[in-house]
Image 1 (tube, one colour):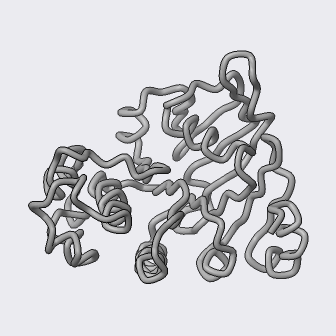
Image 2 (cartoon, helix red, strand yellow):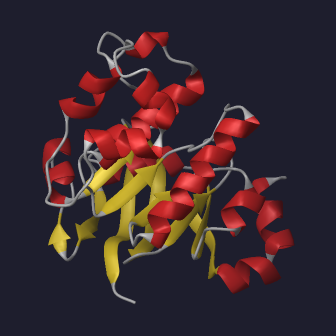
Length: 233
């Protein structure tokens, strides 16, 4: 299966502190790839580089062979990468509807505001509520909806279900399974291995800024104990 988003030999850091040391991974068309690792191992730094929020010191990032290394965030979004950031980062003083439409990119038969409300009925019920009036779970739904409204080719979710109530987590996982079934490529960061194993096609484990283990779903099933040792679970 062809690679949609590819990262090759990525090096990056903050000031004199290096964080990533030659990270290489691929997200295939229509598949879910999972990036795992303990806190501080470079997962969010990798996401920041993908989205143009941090310029790598070396390496290449490409979507459909288009080089987006170091491109500004708006160019990365226009190239087809949608982000659900860690901490949600919705606009607190905008309504649900305004949050969804603020960065929307219309595509024929693509995601629209009403389709988001169909997918997340809670948001439809609260479409006039301000962002700060939503619960954490509702804010995460809104962050996912906002990213989908850009009609991306690949969706990146940083800590997709962290800190959410079990029922909300279940709703998020169901939505991600639906998106996969519809053919959307996904790069997913999360710590819930049981849920990840039900949806992921490929796994990458980061340790101190390097990919120390990678494999497909069968590899993960056969080597889960090894992966858990890297994660200290």
